[in-house]
Image (tube, rainbow, N blue to C red):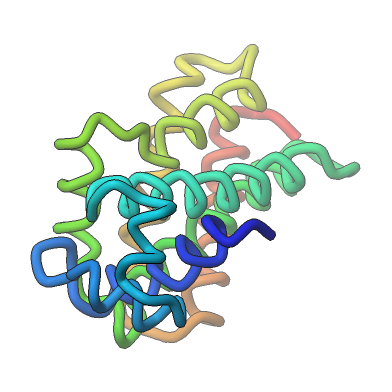
Length: 176
């Protein structure tokens, strides 16, 4: 992992804990264990750091979703696998210490960064190709998954609800 990647990895927790508005280059430097001047050797400003964080997080989410999509097994299991990646990501966004998910999503949008959900919709829609309105179905599934992640209950309850949602939708689409 490059030093730039190490700094971006350390910055994830800083942005999650403090939000974009209250994250400073000093906080990022402290978390990464580098001096502020050293930080500026890798990033021009806070927006640069944030863009690297967003790219890194999105890349990890999409890579995990691609692995789930590419597994062997019934289509319903592969769809569930992709949704499970979203559930896990949405659940961690709501975890203690991650108090600014909406602000961070809004900041990413304001900066023109492509959110992971756009790429997940594409992945799911490709899986659902041949069903009615695959893009709209994929978007609805992702929105429902985010809702499950915010609902009462712990991770096991959320996973059970996600499995049930997947079963219902796939049965309604009459596909494996």
